Every structure is written in structure tokens, then in C-alpha cells.
Image (tube, rainbow, N blue to C red; front, top):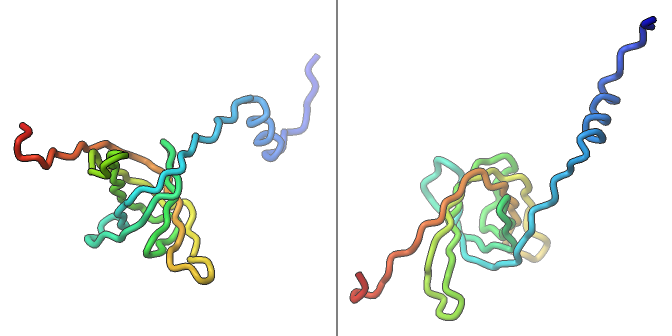
Length: 133
């Protein structure tokens, strides 16, 4: 025999979904790399300068000349250099969205921006030596 029951509340359903799925994806590994970058809000023409604090395959935290609002779509070019010579070997071109924006701390000149990477591609630098083909 079936018995009529009360409907389950939305909050109970929400909590049971996460508990039942059993999967909480691990946070992406971050690499403490200080790399030069240029960034701008999408559709802007002028680039601002910055420097990465850390980077992962899902996002970038960097120090920025100019504070942009959370939610702003951005473009970034991160310069990858050869470790010993410092010569540019590639550029990581990314599109993303600012997920956290921190105004400069007292006495500091640079703001902090955290960007979730939505799309990226690696562009190799062309050799500067005229003898290479």
C-alpha cells in the first residue's frame, strides 16, 4: 500500500544533490610564477601592464596597474621566457572573466585581480636571429 508524503523542501534537495554526487573536484594546482603580462577589458584598445602572482590551468592571479570590476570580461597576454636568457619563447593568449578584484593595500601601488580562464592558446615567438629559417 502507498502512503502520501509531504513534498521535499528545495533546501533539502539541494543539500542531498551535493552529498549524493560524492564528487568535489580538486582545486587546480597553482604555480608561483612571476611573469609579465598585458591585460585589457574586452573591446578596449589600450593595454595595461601587470605581473602574475600565480597561475593554474583554470585561472590567473596577478598584480595590476588598473583595478577592473569583478565580472568584467578580459583579454590577457602572458609572456613566457627562456629561463636562462630571459628571451621570449612564447605568449599565452587568454580570455577570461574577473572573479575577484582587490584594491591596492595601503601603501601599495598595484591592485590584485583574479581571472577565471575561459579560453587560451599558446603562440610561439618567432626567432629574432636573422640566420635562422
